[in-house]
Image (cartoon, rainbow, N blue to C red; front, side, top):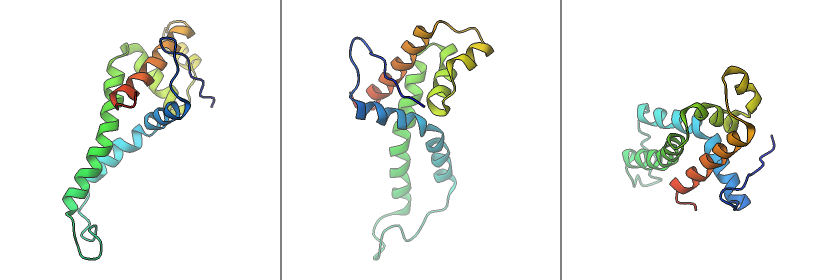
Length: 132
């Protein structure tokens, strides 16, 4: 899948940052399920190393906080785009579904409108994570 980056207000993200934001969005499902798994798992008593320093609950909480920050950034960015574009754009980034597959299911706007909302979503994710 080609990751073409359209300009946003006349500028582009650095390529490494753009790829990082794409990776965060593509990892969204795994992070949501990992957070749920951590909530429902039993603590690992040997997480503190050889001498048992550290708390298993604390290490679980730190993992959750780190992942939850990225999940919240994606959710907040989704709310900033129109509802009819949320799932198509998210599925396009996560699974590579093409715009044409969604156009057949529902009446979506022109390709340029689709692309504008896609790059707006990615910029919002980067801003929510304080990467820009």
